[in-house]
Amino acid sequence: MVGSQVPAPRVAYFSSRGPSHMYPGVLKPDIAAPGVNILAAAAQSDVTAKSSGIMYKFDSGTSMAYPHVSGIVALLKSLHPDWSPAAIKSALVTTASVVDGYGLPILAESTPRKIADPFDYGGGQVNPERAVDPGLVYDIQPYDYLNFFYCSNGLGEEDDCSTAMSTDLYGLNLPSISIHDLKTSITVSRTVTNVVPVKSVYKASFEAPPGVNMMVNPDTLEFDESANTHTFKITFTAIHSIQGDFTFGSLTWSDNGAHTVRIPVAVRIIIEDLYADVS
Image (tube, rainbow, N blue to C red; front, side, top):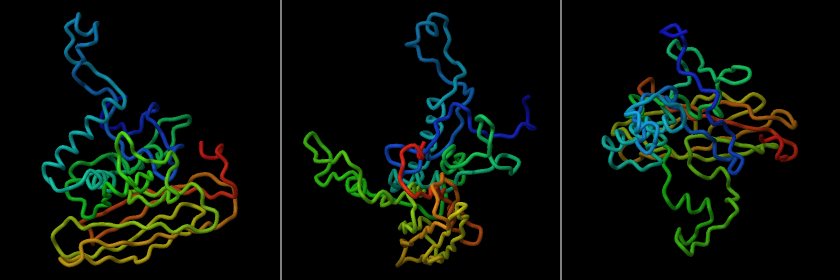
């Protein structure tokens, strides 16, 4: 069936899913973008395409989705040349859509088909129009990455990066939160920067993952010319002592309708950290 009566977008069955086994404290994927039956240029290194004179073809996969995101990133960089890569990523994630064209939850093709969650689409389906004006961004500086990977002297041929990840898995100022080892209570810090040159007040609202109590402090942020950056803390507390699985929620900052800055949240309550439970 084709046409406007088919809900779209959907997450394709072949789309890579989370969680990240190497860095479970980093929520993956980040974002979803169109990647099914995309009309694209045919690589002329393909003998069949070249000999047949095929210049364009329909293709599917990540190789079709990332050019969409790359183009949007180029657009954002041209409009905001002072934004860092992390700020641009934040703008994409926090303004993404989690509903289809009819306002229904995006579905994920799987066995069986299900309502998509952050391990299917990260922040959601990319929305370039909203990403141009995100309101707030979660920015990250290069030294934050170096600290995360224990690269105290930077990167190079003789770098001293440890093969072990930082003990502070949740220290990166990502536009998402993934906690894979909640036993009792964990507090995570995030910092947001106002990229709109006006005074504004943002209030927090959240959807706590099932089985988890969630608290944001402070829950109101005021921005002006003298204070365009604020740090807040999110505390997650397990309601039950169980060996559980990931459940999902979200945290949203809004300024009376002009901007809605949403990040996905994934939390797994555990008694013992067993690798089999991460898959």
